[in-house]
Image (cartoon, rainbow, N blue to C red; front, side, top):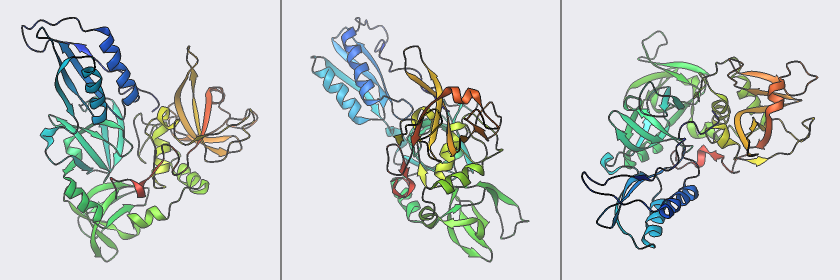
Length: 399
């Protein structure tokens, strides 16, 4: 997923009536430019932050502001700038999380893979996915849907049936619990310590559960929603130990990437079940204890640039390759990402392939994909602690 498809609209500084039957003067264009400038500075990417404001200059001479933002400093900057031009401001801009959520502004996902939408509603576009036990920040509620922020900063809507809301104190308890990560490609949890008992739920690699003890070959686990189950102990590893054992390396990157071969392409998919191009790279890095941005057009700003020639000299196995086209204004539009394997080969999830595959970028090699070579624009090397790459072990929502 490689574009701004979720949040295309710029900041809307609408000229609206503050209440019924109240006249509104034309809004000065200079103030609209000022607001848009503040948005450009604080919210260059609406996929990870918001500043949505409506404004009206009423006949009483007051400037009424309504809307919401995820950034208190953006609101402060806006108010200070408007105050400097001598307007009396009536401020109704909400800072998220919304006050009506109370103290439960955190959440954990409760199923193996949770589907997040671009807008509220099951029929809306799949924006991204998160795995069981992923911590979220809850920002607001609209009926049975919640607007949430993922650990990578991505904003989307999640149905209430997919999450369990928690207070900060309850999140602290979860962080202190004995958490286990599921390490097999897929599997199940069971009602009793037997694989022929009724299944409680399915699991995929990277799901997080809380351990409450062992019984024979099984570990007793607790789901975020309180469900109790049993999982084969050989399929689990202590979360902290697992993170310590998966340092980034090409050998591990290649092994994890190739384990995804043949899995179907899914627009918005970000799980070991199915994935889009950037969901593929996120999955490969998550299984090495790393969090990277959601979309290809965000990932291209992570890590460090890599120079290479027409024979691809300069690239190292494990580098991210970015594909797209040049816009009319000369800028790059990134639409795809894959991982370089060396010797001209790269692995990726492409909608035109139907499933994850390895293809070639060197014309003389079998499996050459000319449309990919022609659209190759950039290469980046994403290492821990470089721009846009977070270690799960250092992420405050996990520890």
